[in-house]
Image (cartoon, rainbow over all chains, first blue to last red):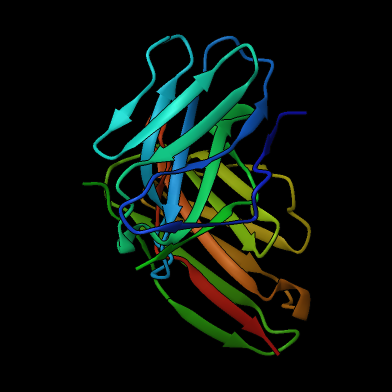
Length: 114
Length: 111
């Protein structure tokens, strides 16, 4: 079965500092995408960043970057220069099953301290 | 931008009621999904649809059904609501390729 594991239920970071959220996954696919979604208190799930598994280069979106280790099936999210608005639940997701359904981890709640 | 709209932000229903959760997307996506979100459990797939009138069960379909009569609309139906269906419900849609685009969620309370 395809699984996604986020081992950190909660994390905390000081404003302006860097934090890394961990994610490991298991898939039988050879070509796939990985995603990080953010869910602030407004509840809207927002796509933060995506990584295509066939690309060796780690994806970057402004202050957000990933460390993708395909052999280890690891996909961590690094947030640089953390801002108060980064406080949210973060979910790692990997496609699983038919029709492009996403399998989500249980989430990491990130707090940002001023 | 893709817009996925869920008709209610909050719903309170009584045990045994029939409940409809509506979701509309404006991007002509073939694929639509209903997830349930509970603390500590992440998002779990209830049902998805890959075309009008087509549906497939997800991981937790028991107690739910769905309807997709038009491409833009995907409804989740609780035939007889129970207290263990109190949860956050998220609708999403997708083009042929990822990612998923989500609505704002409906927080359902069954009393």
